[in-house]
Length: 129
Image (cartoon, rainbow, N blue to C red):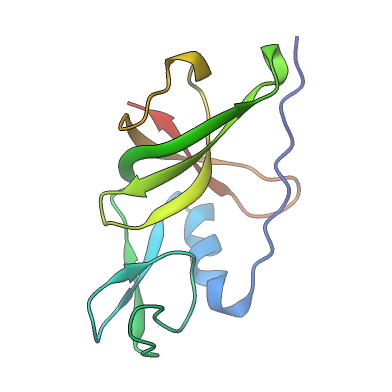
């Protein structure tokens, strides 16, 4: 029997605290600029597209597709890192969980799940649908 992989506790900064609080509640938030209308990830106060400071949190659907992935290790110790592009258009680095790494494919649909971290906030990860 394998020991579950420990997920390090994320560092919650003031500008990302709402993101982590929502994750604890099982919700995925994405920052969106109210000036240019573009979403962005990772959570930050300044829009990377137009440099506006007028951004707001919007709840994401929590669905998307695998953009790229890599499985590390083997057997029970294997884990899969992936870039997932959300339906809202942003791409984030994450883990794929509760799925067979050998069956993962680029373009495959995924949905968010929240995993506990080691003494910190829940962490959004994805599983195949």
